[in-house]
Image 1: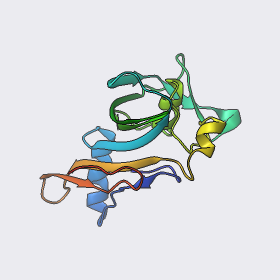
Image 2: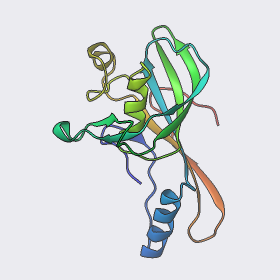
Image 3: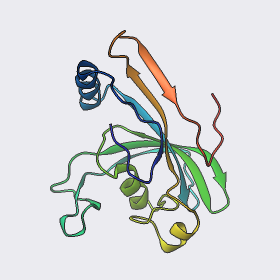
Image 4: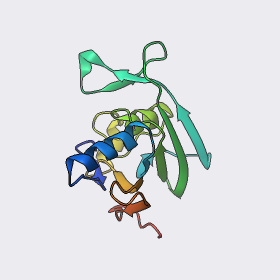
Length: 163
């Protein structure tokens, strides 16, 4: 499991090599459910949606990623509105795949870059926030020792969440 350097929030770490292998398999097989919270630029008119755009590294501009319908790897993100506030909105983002910068590229591609995103955001959006407003809020996974489904969450510093 990894987070972009500027993303805040929850991460999971294994305590033993066996647990690491188990968790790695869960991420690989997409057993782990992830939820992020992001404040995005612009007025989002729909309440929910799914973004399905394939991604690939933008080699001349690494570490940037880009949409590439011919050579990109599949990438899907489900989203829903949590709050509308003037010229921005807070969204719940649930990646179905785990590509590098997936959420950041997907939000830019639908015209709503994440505020504070110096890689993919607009000048207005970068200056509107002191940092990238992307937060790893929730992880649901199978505990590698007990086999029980467990959920962890971390309070979002820029949006108050309930339960």
